[in-house]
Length: 136
Length: 324
Image (cartoon, rainbow over all chains, first blue to last red; front, top):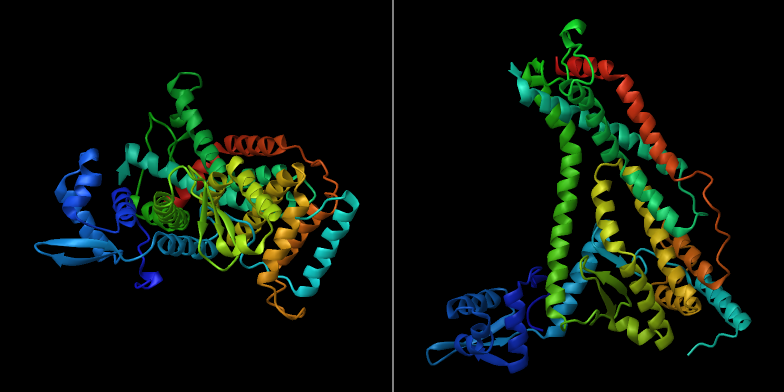
């Protein structure tokens, strides 16, 4: 992953996400080919596609190289790593303020020492023995 | 001098701000004495939400109660007593509109209003940024998939997005948990989504901007714990409580410190998660019905309204004195 994770944008528009997904599936494309594949059916002009690709390039999500007279764009990040960066940013924000729209299974601040955890594990095992519950 | 409707609106705003402060003070007392861990989780959530709404409720109530005589006078239901009473203080009256020096009142309004408004703006901005991020994530994730798996070694599971909540699991969590434990974790998150916890938390967050800091911490912590226990109970009801309990222990083990005497490690939150695991593994603790009926909060608000209504002139005099 070439760009630094923290430089990933916090914001991804609908068309931007759509173009990224397209380029992940076809590996590379020019503004014209992307417009043919994604823009035309949605009634989006070639100009809009061009400026959106340019914006994604400035956000360091796309690489481009000049082939004859047009730019050929390729995704510079994988879907997985971009998703992971955005999720970890959401998680980082969650731990900062107490009211964001996220509910975590366990608070990041919740920590127990090994002895306490051993005790809890014994409690669970004892309960499983009583109920005849098997772990798989 | 300003007079007429702007003056009336400013007086109403001032009364509203006073109402916020009274409500915040009432909420801090409520948070101190009305919350108990022994109540069922859903009741605890609802009680926190009601206490959190007190500043806004008292504020609106104060404005309503003061506006009521003016409306009743216009409707001809009560006598116009402004002139008989004298104009030595501003009247909340649409016939005898108040008139006074604007300067001090404007300064007072800005000074008193800055705190709740700044808090509201901050919360709304955080929420907006978060929603934008959640939208971006939802757009990247495969369409119609409610479960997103993200590449991270830290075991984690959470919900993201208010309108269409998605469950996010990290690869670390998937690797470390057994299939049964994973299913229990997903059930827990689904229970949060079904209860609309993210939307409830959003509204609670907005209400928190009008509370005193200590009350805010107390309310949020109580609500979060109750919401977690409610989601845990939903898993326990499906017979998978022990799987969730062992999943929690396994996740906690990842971040467990080596020594038992680590002061940082035994933070305030530790007691909360231990309680959750014990609830899941043990028989759930006896849930006491609240000794205080929920309607008492509404009765309390009614009493505040009555008190305000009976002190209509005292409030007008007070506002007149503040605006002097």
